[in-house]
Amino acid sequence: MANTVAEKGVTLEVLGQCMTNTTRGSQHDATVEYRHLWSYAQQAALIAVSDKSEKDGCYHLITDPERRAKRIAAHYADLYFKSGEKSRGKLQFYWPALAAFVVKDIVEAYRFARTGVLHRDWNWNMASIIRNSVAADLGSAAFTQDSPYQHAIRTYSALAKGNLWLFMDIYPWLWFFLEYGINSDGSLNHKRLDACLPHRNWDTFQAASKEAIEELPYGPSWVGRLSNRLKGDVVYQQGKDFFNVPPMWSGGSGYGQHSAAAYGAHRYCKVNAKNYDAGYRTPPSAYWKHFQEAFYVMEAEHTELSRIVDDKKGLAAVVVCRQFKQTDSIKKAYSQLIKEHGERIAIAKVNFQKMELVAIAEQEQINVLQPLIYNDPKLKETMDMNHQFSRQTAGWISPQFKVIYSAAATNSDPELETVFDPPDGMKDRFLGHRESLPNQEDRMKFVSQIATDFNRLMEKKRSYMDGELRKVHKWINV
Image 1 (cartoon, rainbow, N blue to C red):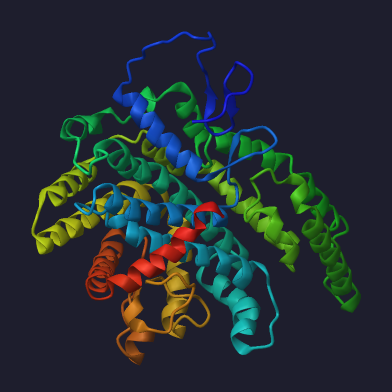
Image 2: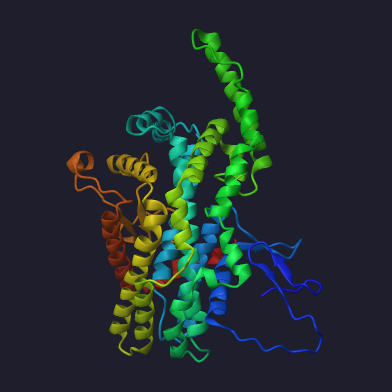
């Protein structure tokens, strides 16, 4: 899976070291076990979100969650198209098509967190003034103990964590089915598919694959390194030094003194954030030159990343997730795919696709994302506050939680989107019961509506949907 260097294989930052047979003219027969095949499937997921360096020939994990999300969306679309091609039309993965649209919207959520909150961009229009200044600060203080910057970074981090680990879990399940379950003639390898599921287990992976997973963001090793980096963040410490003289709040001179210190700290952090990054800045340091209040953003970053370090339950959820053991949901999904392949009646095939979507949605939402991110009470606080502002202002101050069925970031056709908990009239907008996206029951109700709308569009506007998915697919090499 990689070009050899000298006679020792290639060291890959993500994939570890792949040894090769160094004796010329010799052969060695190796027994390939299911654990090896699952290691290859896991490596496919790792390579999908990595870049191969021209300097060292190694694959390096993409540290920018936004670019990583584009790759993930594209690879979900890739599964959708390739499954139909390889099976010669006998089956087509269905959930990945929906997932490609959802992850495309996550890319937009990252962008809003940066440009809508962290930039503090003082555009002279009322929505921007309200969102980026006094009202946002007052609203944040009234409903929570945290600043708008903390809420933005909290959301950014949760999306990065959930999106990466969900991909690490689900993509290999489907990639394995595509690569090893469908024969070159489009038929199924039933023996392999019937036996493979119990054998996926991180504990039995090939050593390099196992180590690569162990080093991924938000896992124990990464959190340990993050803890040390927070303690040694020289840029943050230097930024704090601008405030060594306590501001005097009586009189204009004291305020001016504080403003001058803040200006110096912001400017310093904007310029120097990149000097202490190495993939840990949130968002990545390349974006910090636009943050008008960069030191305050860095304070919020330290608070939220420190919270991640101290979140034992969140870390335990990652450890459980990375075992990658089979679940009833995955067994159901495989069963529906196998049934779809053998079905000859078109409408029955579609029904099996819908059941596959439901099964993988259960794996996604209940088995992976609920313990991984949604059980975090602070994230719930943030998302509930955002939803309140969104619901009351129709997305004017805070964006609505929604899925847009297009490759574009925005949409003007209500038929091409599903909105979470939309209000029923003006009274309901302000006084009605509000649902909570982190609440499993509320979210699964939303997922059910997404599935209904997605199914309708796939039945009525298939050429349009495929066209939009091909646009998302173009992100596969970004």
